[in-house]
Structures are given as C-alpha cells and as structure tokens.
Image (tube, rainbow, N blue to C red; front, side, top):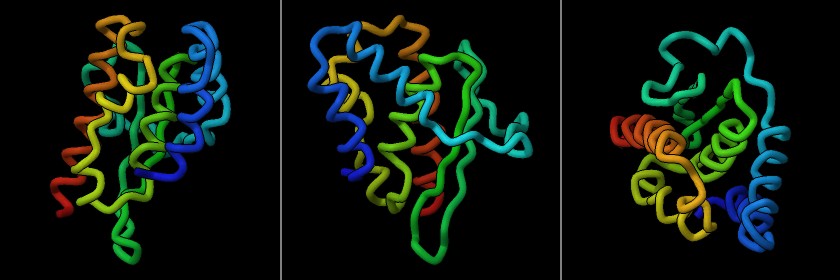
Length: 137
C-alpha cells in the first residue's frame, strides 16, 4: 500500500458520516497539484467519465514506478481522482497490478454513496492505470 494513500485516506476513513467524508474528498481535490495545460490532450481524457477527467500516465524507468498526474472539471471527481492518484502514484507496475481500488473505496465507505455514473468513472480511471501497469510489467 502506498504511504501517500494511507495518509490521505485516514481522514476519510475516520470521518463521521457521509457529509464529512464528502468534505474530505473535496479538500483532497483542492490540494491536487495543477495539471499543466500541455498535458490536457485528447489522449489523456478518460473515456467513460461523465465529467471531463484528464489522466496523464508516465513511467519512471530509473525508479521502475508509475508517475501520474490528473485533473477534472468537477470538484468531487477531482477529489476522487486525487485519492486514486495517491493510491497508485510511485508504485511499481507489479504493485499497481495487485491493488484493488474498488476494495479500498469500499473500505473507506465511499462506494455505497457514489452514483452509478461516478462509480463507472472511477472504474474507467483505474482501468486506464491498470492497463498501463500491465504493459510495463
């Protein structure tokens, strides 16, 4: 498990109720580093998301790790994206392939509160990362 994810997920996990979890997710989105406009190309758009989501995936050959950046045009999705980036960023492809993001979101008590379209968007983001990780193994 990525230590960055452990740090950001702790506040969500311990939040009292859905409104507090929602607030924590929104704060994560605000803290997400600005994605350079040059990376917001059509290839970076995640298919299957209702909102616009850009996901830039690169590979650091020196560290054998995934390097991820992203952005969204909606606040809640930006927060969910920040959570996903924290989960996968810096992992080796082998580590990333072993992560079950759905289980992590379920553990945090998020899945039951997300609309089906948000759930589909999360799946699309994770699938894109997992595909890249598989190609690098």
